[in-house]
Length: 208
Image (tube, rainbow, N blue to C red):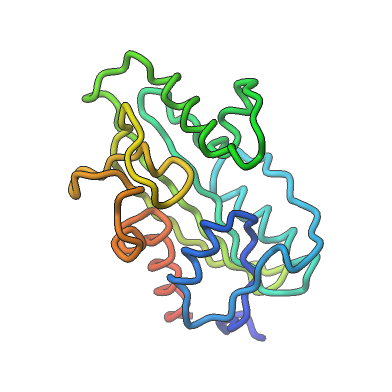
């Protein structure tokens, strides 16, 4: 596979089944492999930015499998919290010392966000989901394909909806008047941070 060739088989470097399901819908023309098919040592996500962490994850997974890898690093940045939880979005509650079962991680993170925003009025709860995608053709790929997407909204004071995952029940989408968890999957995939980043990635691949 040459540097300019788009790989047809791609390992998606995420253990998040919700993310993988979204990528399956967004990248239907590719053969996607699950991370749990392999015994991978997790990459240490020590970088301060989404792009840098995505590169770390992609290189680690590609080095261990020999496959082309798509890595996503994404999270929620809340203006009133100075951009937090940011790259620590998946670990927001744990960083605050909250104890929870692994299957309750999303709920714990949402509760921690509500606690952090206690007393912040509705007009000051602006937030944005950010997504950075990195596609490596091989572990030493010197020209990774990088695509990003941003989805702007605001944080609700109570959860709404049962779809999606992560912070979706708390993320209000003003143009639709509902939370991200209340959107149909097709609509969410068209307008979300991950959807926008994937659209940009596909354009990059088409031009490769």
